[in-house]
Length: 239
Image (cartoon, rainbow, N blue to C red; front, side):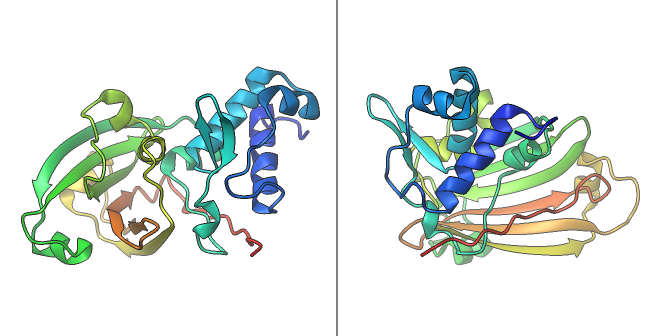
C-alpha cells in the first residue's frame, strides 16, 4: 500500500481496476466484506468505506439480503471515458465537498429545453440549481431532469451526490456527452462564485442518457477557473 494515501482509497482504486480489467463481470457478486478484509489485510470498516465509495461512483450496487454486485450498465459507457461527479472528483483529491446553496423546483419545459429533451413545451421537469465547493465556492450547476423518479426536497439529497441518489433508485446511465468551453460568466454567476474580474471561466455541458438512449439529465456547470482544474481519467475497457 502507498503511504499517505488513505487505505480505503487505495483499496477502492484497486477494486475499481479489477472491475475495469474484467476480473469481476457485470452482475457478478464480489467477495464479502469479510473475505475482502482478509485478502487486503485491513478491517471490515475500511472495506465497507471503500465499497461505499464504489457504490456512489456506480461501479457497484448493494442489494439487501443478496450482496454487492458489479453494476450492470458500467461497461455500457464509452470504452475510453469515465465520467465522475464533483463529489467523487473531490474524493479523488482527498478534499471534502460541500454544497453551499441548493434549490429544487418543478418547471415547465420551454422551447430550448423541449428541443433538448425531445418533449412537448410545458412538460414538467425538475430543475436543481447548486453552488458547491470546499471552503470556497468552486462551481455553479444548473441541472434539468426528466422526472423518472421523485426527487424529494430533502437536504441530504439536494446537498449530496445526485448520481448516487439516482443510482439508489435504479436510474442508471449508459452514456454521457460533455462539451467544455471557456466563457464569460454572467454577473449573477460571478457573484455566486465570488469571481471579482472578467476573466473567462470554464463551462461544461453534460447530457446523460439511459440504456434506451433517452436523455434523462442536462446540466450546465460553471467553474471558478482560479480554483478548479478540469481533470479526467482514461481507461481502456475490454470488450
